[in-house]
Image 1 (spheres, helix red, strand yellow):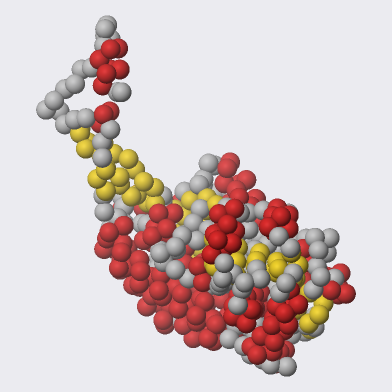
Image 2: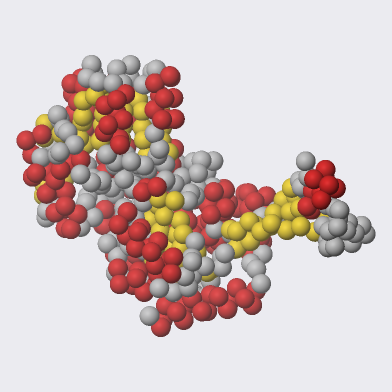
Length: 458
């Protein structure tokens, strides 16, 4: 505990001595971060393979390359983002001018998850650096190989008084959350998110919570089934289903239900062949704890399985699995799956869709597959969710121009691109008044000024 407090105290002192970190220095630090990632790139990719069975292509696309793009975007735009913005005056500011200053929060704590252990820790770091903060990073202990590389990479690149990495289990998280950071950014489960928010509230620390939920896919009877099946299964099966915005369950219109299930099975075979367990393109479940959780779900609903269902604890492998004729009473619909298991539910009309989604409100993502623009628009505007796609899955996350974040039980706050910068900065409202003109209307004694103020403020 004392070590963590010492790190935080050193970071606060570092900022206090600097006053603020200049934009030029932030740019230099972002460039240093990118150079360091390139230096450790092969180590990162190998660690991702060891911890999660990620293929080099998938690991680069979704973790390392993703972060490169974010760093480049921040370097390109940071001078614009940090500019003092002049805004219009209301009557109370006359005679004067009004401005918005973007200022750092201070010392930031970023807690990362295990499913994208590099990207989901370093991506918010980019925003924190751009915002002029000092940072303590806490990687997931579940992905020990990635954690080890991150510790070495950050230590090799930055002084601990600026950016530090702390390792350990949930007890370390708890100890860190008891300290008076100036901002907390957490990615992980809903249950842990509640603990983070509760602890932060004791010190009135602002938070961003990136959580999850059961993200639905709605496929209506006008959808292109071949393309829909391919895009849904891709979104479901990358990282072996361990993606916070992965399709969690499918609501398929009764007219196309059986055909869509057949397409799902066909696509899985096209992606991974007949011997999926030995296919290096398909990832692995992170640990035994989550293997047991997913196995319990499959055991409970094994009568609904129409494809897959294979479990190999030794290799941390669960095969892509399709369940048919599922309803809300099945275990597979009781919690976020976070694995390669896809329940497919039949619906007739919008009332059915409302019924199912109402049982798992505010998902992090929602996807609709349809050639009917009116139907897609109705779904997008009717339901509350973090973000999503029409005729695709997950691609809304891979943008520096779209804010990414949840709502309600799926989280609060957003990041990516400028949204990351905004998350890690406070907007200070400043009025600069002239002394050349002194308006006495608002000062006592008030006497008969009420009529004048009413006329002025109409």
